[in-house]
Image (cartoon, rainbow, N blue to C red):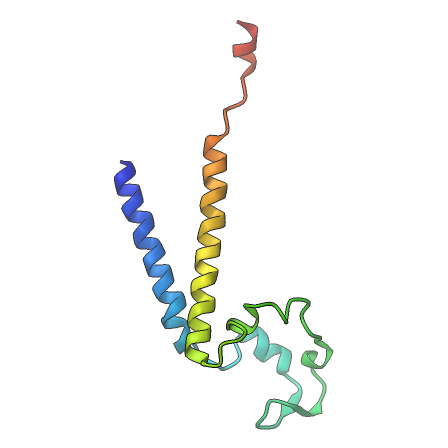
Length: 121
């Protein structure tokens, strides 16, 4: 049974890595529903700068982690956009898989608490 689980997890990891490393580069650059709603009421120029109007986007500020290595769906220091996005997505999947796997491993290794019927004996 554990061999099947290992193959299942390896297959899931491979699919996630392919999606994050390759397919993510073909995602739409158009604003999603939340971004589109936040932009309602403003007029933008070709560079994405607000030229007139009032909208929620005018109130946004820089994110606290905007200078982190994986900010902006890319990896800082890599000039090739395709490679930068692929590496950032792959790193994100590996970090998430590692943290999740570690937490599951820790939870599985915990000894169950003794029940009240065990203590009475």
